[in-house]
Amino acid sequence: MASNKSYWEKRQNQRNTLPNLTPIKQDLLYRIASEVRTQLIDTIESGTRSGREYKRGDKIHIASAPGEPPVTDSGQLVNSISQPVKNGNNEYYIPITNEYAMYLELGSINMRPRPFIQRSMDKAIEELKKSGVLK
Image 1: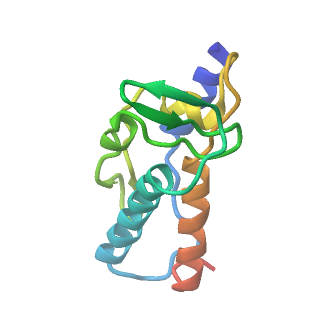
Image 2 (image 1 turned 180 degrees about the vertical axis):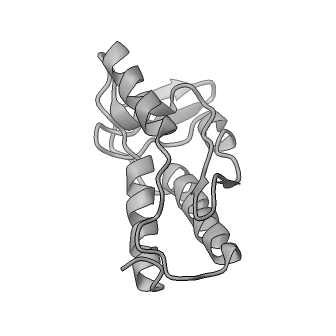
């Protein structure tokens, strides 16, 4: 598990500068970052999952299968996704404070990955290209 933690810490500490930016207003970058946050939340809260079924209280919960984005259960993961924070001239990041988010994204010794962060970032890059922000 230490290798995952090190990898995750490196990813969190990287300052990802958007390459080849054309001059745009900061509010556009914020709106794009906000859309990424929305996509993160929507990915977790929507869609069907094909994982294991189990009873949680009075309800039946269907977990995500390996390779699928996580599905909401208690709401803790979704509630830990904060608003975008400015981190430089053309940089924003979206804090995710839940400690098990990294294990969902990258997997662990006992669990295969349930990626959701990278997928949302890929969608954001597509959006930036469509809007002409990235070349």
